[in-house]
Image 1: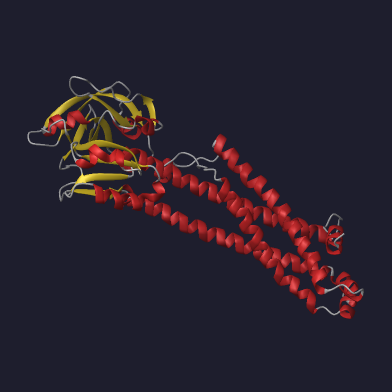
Image 2: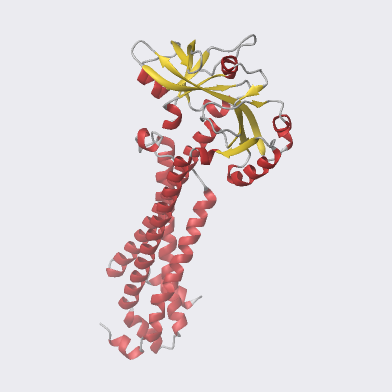
Length: 404
């Protein structure tokens, strides 16, 4: 049997004394540190995924438009017969492409007048992506003979204008001459993102074509969904090389930079916070092991007097530290994953949608990340264990035995 391991098992703090208290503090320190790290990463990744999914679902990953110096919502039309649109299936990184157009206007009710933007979409619009944000009603039904006069309105706008599912509203379009259409609300959506919910209606692109005098083969632009959002930069560069020379490719992360800057700021704060937590765990573990060595000074002196090497004695405390670390990690995983599971299923912690763009703290599971966090804290703590263990080589047997 390994002598160092045998002795370490005998002094693991099962007895009711000062050492036992120190062991419990050490285990609690490791458990709390790991649990905080797990919860922090699960929440941050949940925030990032929830917000980016909303933006991408509503506005796609990339947008292809004509070069223009005009207003954002008055697009120069692009042709559906363009080489890119007719052949995008040959590009392996593209998942889906759909046409769209915008038209600014005013909604008038008996009590309110509200400036809005109608986003026109076609039959190939990805209703599945958008469906998870549809709170009431259904998506618009397209008309075979003409255009649909149904629209989707945000929950925020419907509350502000006191409109309900099935109500009819009059929308005035800003052009010369001013035109209006009587529209019916077929659905109410809610993304929680004010850039969309404050002003965007969703309707039939055929209506915008008719109002603008466009042919059925024209649109305001194309929304491009890619298979791997992590390769957005690469996809933009490749797509720019494929589109016609008069077309431009925008990343949605640039068009809605305020959201992505906010996520980047949170990301920096998360890593700073986790570094601080890990540093505290290092200091705590080093201090605790030093206390345990000092408390066992007489035992160290006795073992040295009996011929034990410094390496054998250091191994005793390294085994001790490993036991503390593994037990702390076990409890840390139970606490961190357990709290994450409760929040994921029961949404215990609410949020203010006005400030956080969602009504509860989101959780995104990532098992490889949890494994990396466990390995990281295991390696980090073991590195710090080497520092107080070196103190053992400086102890002289006679002084150590006399130590009290």
